[in-house]
Image (cartoon, rainbow, N blue to C red; front, top):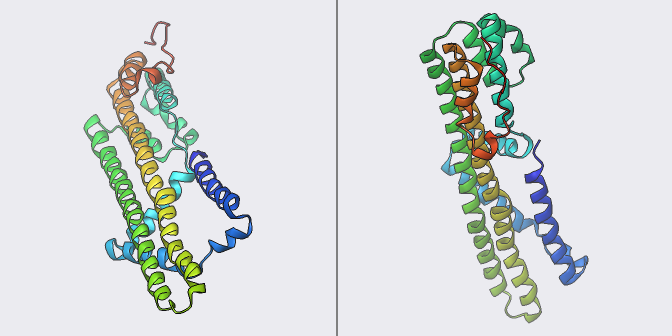
Length: 264
């Protein structure tokens, strides 16, 4: 699990709460809690999202958003080292020698790739089957990002709607000046909720999903090229050099080059 997103959410919410307390004391926190406003913003945002996207897509976006918080993507240099080791095993024991390695793998995509390799699939078959799965993952992540971004746009809009409702209600009570201040405060709270949900939750999660998606897809492209290199019988050194081309220079240096004579 990568704690970055949780840390960010906690820091953001904590600093906002601290600002409220410092400006009005602990009693001021109660003034920022308004159930009707919460219902307008959350309910309106959810309703608009369901109108815009099919229900299964929205449910899937929730799962994808959860993944951005609780799932950690493996390091590319570690995957490359693993693939280079598989290359050494295949040259030493043949492709069937990789079969015993499958039970040690916890990445479903890599398991599928190795199984296809052990079953004797050629490079075109490997690239075709694994490429389809990569495209499906890309589309799923893109859909999840789009839904989060849409919700991020809708939340402030429904916050403004709640503010208008509050203002209308306040204007009806102009005959009692003592209620104007409190009515204005309640009217503005919905905008506050909408901005917080959009800029602290939905839009940052959408951006994080995009970042993690690119990292995950890059790892899967590395796996595809790695198993194809193994299928072609490339040496471990050549396989490593091919896969390091997917990395930035600083990351490529983390992959230990083999100074010894390559295995025959």
